[in-house]
Amino acid sequence: MRLPIATDTQRISGLEYQYVREVLDSQFRSSAGSRMNTRLEQAFAERFECEYAIAFVNGTATLHAALAAAGIGPGDEVIVPPLTMASTSFAVLHCGAVPVFADIDPHSWTLDPGSVEQRVTPRTKAVIPVSIYGLSPDMDPLMEICRRSGLFCLEDDAQCFLGYYRGRVVGSIGHASSFSFQSSKHITSGEGGMVTTNDGELADRIRRFNSLGYAAVGGKKGRISKTDIQDPDYERHASIGYNDRMPEVCAAVALAQVERLDERVDARRRAAALLLEARDGCSWLIPQRTPAGSVHACWTVAAHIVPEAKIS
Image (cartoon, rainbow, N blue to C red; front, side):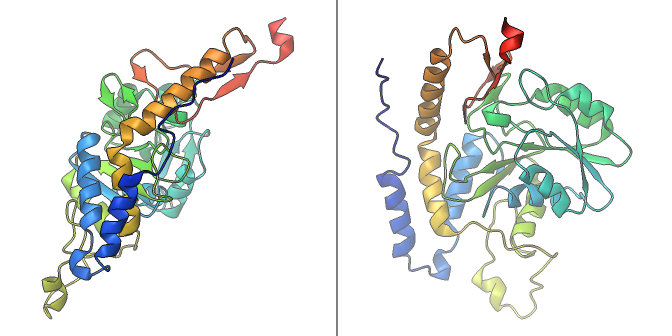
């Protein structure tokens, strides 16, 4: 049987070219700096139902910044799943903290709340639930564990755009959430990332962490002004920070991709549906289970193979 081919499979459209042209036409004048980033952050925050969205150079810097802004440091423990990209644990190590592995649910492959609870110690300061392959973890019990134990919850949603958990868009549930725009993701700017949060003070610290610690930046302000720079009495830096800001050209591409987000996610969901239909009747190929109340974002279709001996 010949499968239908989607008509919207092109990752880059005329819209991306248009926005990149706007940046290039600005000649990178400092007076035009951060305009595309600001538009991107506003669009992303609105789409993911959060007050703040802060753009980054990649989706590992996002995790690092959010943990550091939450005060995670040497001697602290952060609970993470063992099934995920290494960046989840690397970001913990970047903070000088210790990643502690909790188990995953054997059917959904997301972080198991019961296993998390068993691994909470006096040194535990945060939990990073990962929306693996595009499926949200069971967030309500995880958030309850965090509430009882005073833990910071950082969603790692690098693989989950427009996934839903009990009616809420994934990325709006934890204290902060991290997204990746790396080239394999639903939407991309080649590289890039975003942190979302509803906590204004946390957003300010995240912004300063990715913007050299400038005192005048904040959750909704990404650049210091010319007036600030020229003031001899201005104390520029409130803290030490990294230079992890997203370049304007990448922001232009990412903005177009956010505006095309439904199209990009729908294409993956249609492809996933075809793959799952094709495996019907294959008792030896068991796909990831999507629990009731969750909507899978279908970053990829994952399955485990049952050994032939267990089928007969």
